[in-house]
Structures are given as C-alpha cells and as structure tokens.
Length: 304
Image (tube, rainbow, N blue to C red):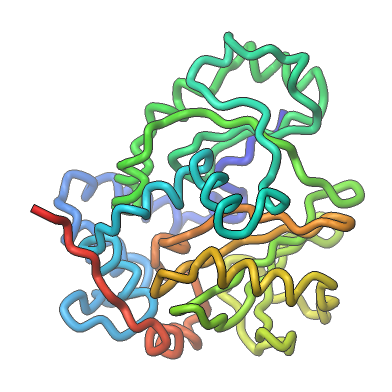
C-alpha cells in the first residue's frame, strides 16, 4: 500500500519545515489575514486583495469572497462524477467502486485491483491499492478516520471543500505500462483554454512543462517539479480533451480540468477551482500576470 499524501519533493527542505511551523502558528487567524501571511511566507510579498491583478491574487479573492453554490459539487470527488457525466458524458468518468465512511462495510470482492482510496473532501491524502497485501494493510491500519477528521478547507482556506460531507471513495486506478499515465491540466478562462500543464514521470523522476492549445511547448513551468527537458508527444485525444474541458467549465470564469489518457480512452481526473491554493508555485511566476489578466473575475456573493 503506497501512501499518496504529501510528496518527498514537498517535505524535504528545512525552509519548508519552518514554513509549516509558521502556518501552524498563524492557523487561528481569520481567513483574510491568514491568507495574506501564508501568501507572504511563500512569495515574499503580500497579495493585493482589494485590486487583484495576478492569477495567484485572484485565487485568494475567490477563496475569500466567491460563494458560488455549484462549487462544492465540483470539488467533491464523489459528487463531481455526476457533473462530469451530465456535462461531458459518462465515458469520461473514472469508475467508482465504493463511497462511504466505514471501510468495515466494504465487500472487497466488488473492488477490482489496482484501485485508489482517498477522501472526497480534500487532496494530498490517499493510498494506492495494487495487491491484496495492500488491501490487508489498508484494512489493518485504516487511515480513513484521520482522513475524515482533516479540515482540508482550513489548510488553504478553500471555502468549497468545507461544504463537502467527508467520505472515502475507492475508484479504479489508472495505469500506463508500469506506472501512472501523464497528467494533463487544462486551464480555462470563460470558455477559452489558455494552456495545458503536463505532469509526468520518467525513470521514476517527476517533471512538468506547459503547452499552448496548439501544442507548442512554453518556456517556463511552475517549478513544483523540474522542467521536462524534452518534447512531450501531442496526445491523440488533445482536441477531444479541450472540448470536454470547455464543456465542464462553460459557465465559470476560471477552472482547471485535469485529464488522464489510457489506451483508447480519455478520463477526467478532477476539476480544480483553487490550483495549489493560489500560492507561489501554482503557476510559473512568468505567467502570473498574464493569467491574471485573462481571468475576468466575477464573484458570486453569498445570499442573505
């Protein structure tokens, strides 16, 4: 059983450990000052929340002030599947084996391996279940009470996650060869695709890069992983991918839609409203202002 929580890439440095201690120290602050200080700790400056210009600033404003009632259903990893099926088609939905809160109730004869177990109301937590040995360990250790207790929406103050009922979902694990398929992350602003961020693994090393909708490689990446030095082959399903992304994000001023490609099939991984919490590293610094300009932000105020 492989834990898919915070990666070694994120855990390693002393600087990152000090930041986590700082975030814990300020965790009791109200949302706006907490966001301002966390943003500062990662960027070295405070965000302009009154007149946001950058993409990263506009993500913070969305978290604080945009209360669109459809958001919880988009970030809920179980409920989002119905949205994907309705807007794009059931063929793009990754098969779900089980959803619930108590894994003791699972009939494991109905679970096809390999599979992935993860909470529905957050990210960065989960387990790969490749073999029956993984399943036995998952049952014995049962990390799900911890998953369900995490207040994910408090970590980056992402409002929509707080409106999701915590559950555990077990779904089909997508594989390509001996590993995971490449991850294509499509950024859409008011129905227009700006670019595709690609995350991939080669020889056990994680990389990333960005491509235009015409599949021309862009110069910079977000630096979460190293820039992939080679060209990534244009996916055969690219046109279909961009069409599905537009359909899923049609009524929103911004959304990121993540895709995986397996032989003969395109899958929607998730729909993301707050990439990387909108903090440093969620997009390349060189594109922060450009993407901010493309985002014609419209805030949905909470009624009453």
